[in-house]
Length: 324
Image (spheres, one colour):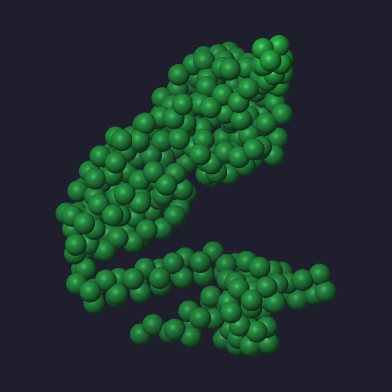
């Protein structure tokens, strides 16, 4: 039997851990602060540990609270999927498929996949969780997810892997970087730069494609920061700590703090692949992957918008003035 009181208490714990403030957490939960504090104390007594350290500076997780934070997140995710499975079963949707997807797959694949799959297979219940590439792979290998859409190598022991979205890499630069004045950038011009890249363990082949291209240009990239999502990669570059190379379709995540430029060299990549375990013999899984592949085939690489340099803009304005 599901202990709904425990679920409620864990939701309170996560809210306070996220906000680091009882008042803000209470407002987010739609309750007043005293009952929230009382419920956290009930949870602490039930677990036999102190979850938060309270001081004039605010609220911080205790050592025990920090230790259970990730497991509680996972527990709540499982509970939500269980609740969805029960609801779907009541409504006659008995074929359950769980998908783990990185954020780019959440944008490029999942919306159309959800609509199309449910239209073709009315009995299907699709459960989705956003994840990182390494975590998505572990989820499939451990049986927590049936399919993972992420950045994978083309061969993984005991799993089937199928490319879904092909793309090429573009350069992302801080907005005030000198190379933004160029319309295209050669890799050799990046030899002295710090890089923000995905860790090699996330996808060895993806990482090796970048480092191999850099070595062909005469240098090995100095990786200053390793990040786990393309959104974080672009954000770090926007902070001015280095440069990066991202699939062209990731340019949608850029803001005013970064500029994208095409590379002189062409580096083609599989930006999203599907991985699943054929030994589970779920008939709908390869069919869903096939739908995703059809969707991915429609996703073309994006052209790089060329922001005019200040010199070019000044020249254009001067010409306009002469014409007048």
